[in-house]
Image 1 (cartoon, helix red, strand yellow):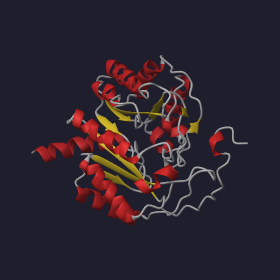
Image 2 (cartoon, one colour; image 1 turned 90 degrees about the horizontal axis):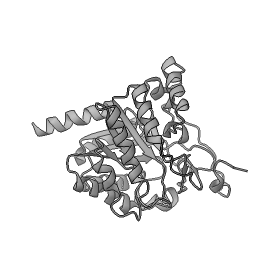
Image 3 (cartoon, rainbow, N blue to C red; image 1 turned 90 degrees about the vertical axis):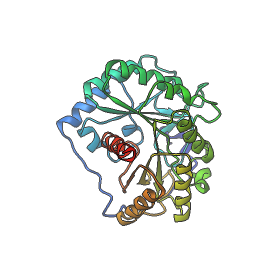
Image 4 (cartoon, rainbow, N blue to C red; image 1 turned 30 degrees about the vertical axis):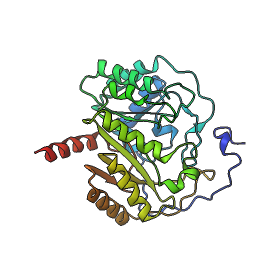
Length: 307
């Protein structure tokens, strides 16, 4: 019986496809990796690196980079691509913002990414809690820039404004895939809700960087991908990430295709032609992969655009 993912018990098995030669996970066990792990464990903090089985965890933790996942480790939705467990979430931990702020200090992060599980059970979807974390980090690490990767706040009105009012530097919300695949890949989400959220954020705060991410290899078509890019540009999204979907277990959505590095380069070229300020497109690209470096690139790109 699948205790970790009870919602996946009745899903048919989808055999894992052999990964191609260009899918390479870097395995490191450096002192920095161990120090990062120790700090996170001591503070009893969740990370998307662990909960979502990110393939880049070894590389990132060896650089003392981690993406904090707030509001528990249990999601109220059951996306078929995601390895985060689904079920009834725990109560909100009021001490977590302070523990995260201390961890940010101890890791000496110049840029931090905060994400969360979906919390449809909360009145504002957890937006006020994002704000608390942001403000706590600002108190103790004034020079640290902050990126949020949020849920879609479906049926939560304008809850997202609580987050923007707290002053993050980047607002990220991932579309993940093309509209046609939503019912299979993101059954609890709505494509146009996600798109509308990104547009509303930019309309509410013109100077904030907005960002979104897509997985490829789920069976999407080229014209569908291009349409999503157009939709994101209409919403004035600045930064697009595109990475290869990797199936976590046999109970998850199957990989339809492994996209080659050359094809990722073509996607990058297409995205830039659409007007994105920055594009990260490669097999191992993930939403918060190289987030610090990319934020610096974003600032430079905006500066060059203004000159």
